[in-house]
Image (cartoon, rainbow, N blue to C red; front, side, top):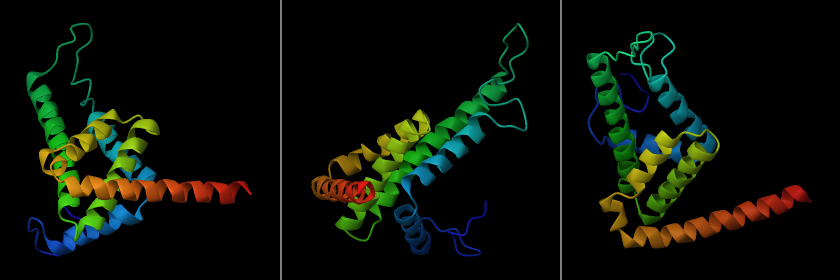
Length: 168
């Protein structure tokens, strides 16, 4: 696995440079682009174009026989995908530098989840993002939700001002 988020030669868990890069990407990329990327990854996983795996799981003609090994691999991959996205959401929020950054990242995840469901009909990403946002670690962090309310109000006002400018 190669990515430009990790420094060359080291893949340390919670590497500060990788976390900073991830936060920057999350905050600078529009939610619809991130939701589209999640949808593409989910579709590639569920409906691979190079073989008949995925949802069909190699069903044979009328017998509808499902290869047990292939089904096991598919379900294991899906479970891992779900857990990884949920954990990724929680980690990106908890590793922010301060409460304001955590609230901004949380707000971004909410927008990504909304775009995933509304625009791309990706209920898998929607469910997994919301699973992360409703984890015990985040639910118990009362200050985060108070600050998030302020962030959401600010975003709402900014969008209304932008809409008014466009309609003039």
